[in-house]
Length: 262
Image (spheres, rainbow, N blue to C red):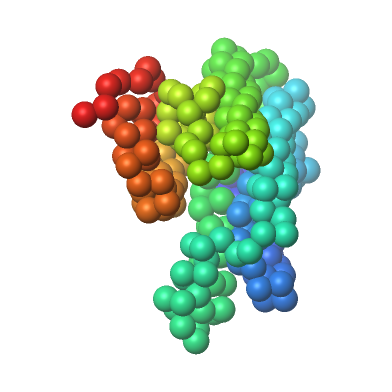
């Protein structure tokens, strides 16, 4: 456990530097939403640090590093491509207005809070990497399959939404194609599923059960904090009755068959 604490302490230093640097960048470009691109990329960087510092079972470490890089860099690249050249996300503009003259200092605090949660969420990675057992157990293979399925599902949902929005004939319409026909937020569901996979992989290691904290935190954040609640409030304002009908017929998070509208 002491080794894990030391590694996460070094990870905290890396994340504090990374998110402070991101804050300096947004001082120059005036767009605080850049943190949305940096946040998923911080996990591969953090896992690379663990990989360099830990002398464990190489196949296991490469497995963890590979799936985290696949998830983190894909999501970061997608968010960059979606947001580059666009105005600042309304969420951050609202925060600046709410915080007034001290908005930059408070924005730094907001960034560092995200760094803290990134550190906590990385617990399954370090728990798995310190495991020196020279064989991969069923939990690790099962977690890998779940994690890859989560990454693939999220990528498909993002691609389906992007393709729908790119068609001018769909302007002003709700996306109910593909995975979006079974969940109002399939991208969030598969994001959470990826973290379930990470935590399952950790179960093959000592103290691995502690990794369950990651999907619990992600589920709460996605469903109660910055995910579904904010998005649906915005959609009710912009889509009105169409979105209310979508809410009545389509599962909010877990994909499921449609039901009749009230």
